[in-house]
Structures are given as C-alpha cells and as structure tokens.
Length: 437
Image 1 (cartoon, rainbow, N blue to C red):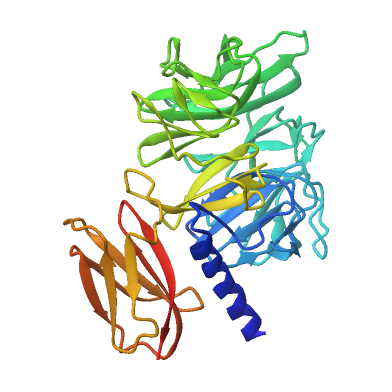
Image 2 (cartoon, rainbow, N blue to C red; image 1 turned 45 degrees about the vertical axis):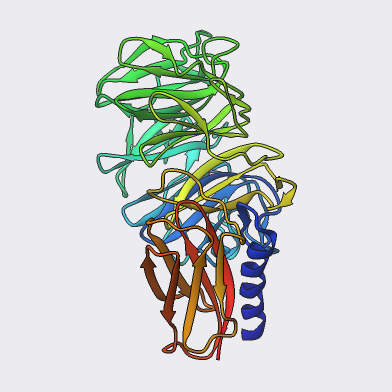
C-alpha cells in the first residue's frame, strides 16, 4: 500500500514537470462540475462543492476536501448538489439541495449541515426548499443563510435567516412568492439582490434590511451570481443585470455605475485576492482586454489573469496555502485534461503577476546528488529566488533563498531517497525530482 501511495505522489509531481503547463490537475480531479471553493484555515484544507459524484475515482457526493497532496472524501459526501461552503465557529458549514446525510449518517438535514472534522451533523431543517440554500456567510458572529426556503425548524423566515450556532433568528423577506436572492453587508446594512417576486407579482431585485424593515431600492434583473464589497463600494456580478450589456455594476450607497466598460459574459463569482477583484464565469472580454473566464480589476483597469484557455465555465476561484485554485464546468485547460478543478503552477499569494515555469531558465543538478545541489539560472539579476525540497509525503524538509545566478545548497543531512526540489521567483517556477544517495 505504501508503494502505491509513493507512486501516486511521484506520478503527480512528474506529470506536472513533464507537461510544463501552467495549470495542474489535482490527481484525477472530479467526475463532474463543481460550483464553490472554500479555503479553510482551521482544517487547513480546500473544500470543493458541486454536482460531482467522485474525486480521483473515489465516491464523494457533492463535496470533498484537498490537503495539497491528497483528497479527503468526507465520509462519501452529501447526496445531491452543494452550493455554498463557509467556516463558522470552528466548523465547516455546507448549504445546498441535499435532503439527507449520506450513509451511514442518514439524518434529515434539508440543505443545511456542518462538518465537525469527522462527520456531518444535523443542525437544522429548511422547509419548502425550492432552490436550496444558495449562500452562507458570516457577519458579526452570525451565519446568514439565503435560499428558496420559507421556514427553518418550523420558524417562518422566507428566503433568509441567521444562525448563532445553536438558534435560528428569523429575518425573512415579506410576502415572498418565488425567485432567488443573494446577500452582502454594505455600510452596516444587509443588502439583497436577485430575481425575486412578492405575492402580488412585483419584481423586487434589490433591497436592504436596516435591522427592522426591508427597504426596496431598485430592480436588478437577469441573473445575479455574486455580491462583494470592494474599495468601499458594493459590486454585483451576473448576467444582464440592468440591461443587455450589463454584467458587473457597483453601488456607492446612492447610485449604480458601470465598472471599466463592463464585462462581456456571465459572472458566477467575485473574489477579492491580493487587493484585487477577481471575476470568474464565462468571460471573454473585460473592458477591451481579451480574457478566458478569469478577469482581474485593480480599481482602475482590467487585466487577464493568464492567457490560458478554458473549455467551459469557471465557477469559483480561491487561494489555498498561498496558491491559486479554480473550479467549474471545465474539463480541459489549453487542451490538457484537468477534470473540473486545477491549481495554477507559478502564482503565489503576494506576487504581482503569474509566473510560468520554463525548464530552459533554471537548471538543478547533479542528479543523483550526495552533498551539494546546484541551482543555476540562465540570466543574472538580484531578485530573490526561493528553494523548497519536499519528501514523498509532501513535507517540506529544506528551504533556502538566494539572489545569485548560481547557488549551492548542502543536502548532505537528508536521508537517502527520492525528493522533489522546487525553485521559483516571480518569473519562473520549476519542480524536479532528485535522488539523494
């Protein structure tokens, strides 16, 4: 069994090196599309949720977790669709369209549960669930739940409620009849946007809760995919929000305005990463910049994250252990198979631009090595370079940094065996297997 595990790790690293691609698959990936990512600091795992039935060939219904090397199937998952995942009070909460916990845990949950590190708990049931729980987020020590329900634990609270870890606090949108909404706190008030109607057939679309009453602000039509506060303004992304060419708008508390000549294509998620706003979806142009489903807004200008091509939608983007991950409906990136989830090989949190690996720029030798490993760049500059050496369990066993064109590192203290050496700077990244003997 140990040999099989070692060979899986070796093949994963070698595949990344030999293919020399920017986006790396996570072993065998998923068998179907995913919708949401959550990078959890408590468990130090990246959670992924969606419509899939397995990860890397093992059953994981709708949800699984990645630790940077291997997949955790979380007891087999949750039957049906997972739509939202977030951390709250040292638990990982999950919302979606599932009704029961997967065997052997068969409790009724109606779209709302939490992972305690070992199993899923039954913490509440949402009745008359038309669209499932679409969104979970924390604010001021409360977890807000938004979806298509009309009551929770027999407490009437249409479409929206809050949870303190033990009790439900109803908020509820009055006279709700149909549709969906998403929410976000802005200027200390809860805003909602979506395509929802009251019992008289009136389309609301955009409203706020002032702590006592709901106040209708305006109408946001079409599809709303995400809401986030960036640079003290409320950004709303989707498709045909206020017209046929409106996919991203911002609201300053009084007025709506366009964002950098808008985006062409539907937005499924907005995330703030490295003080920039990332928009993902089915995007081919941001402003006048060609992009492939990932666009970056710095407050003034649009840019593409990379020049790679996705065959289908990107649904979410997240940073886990300083590295960029995406998930969605794509199976291929640049014609390479990744199966609905991938990590960008060459970008680390805090770096300005994605870096591409290039084996002609960096040489690592000798191999096998006994005492000193040499790292040699084909160009000379004073930029800091970083070296990390990992064992086959993925544990970092040696690290160093240097600013010279050629560098020698003493590896004589490492036990004999196979290792992975990673060297990177802002321009390049290379992983290479080395044998210590």
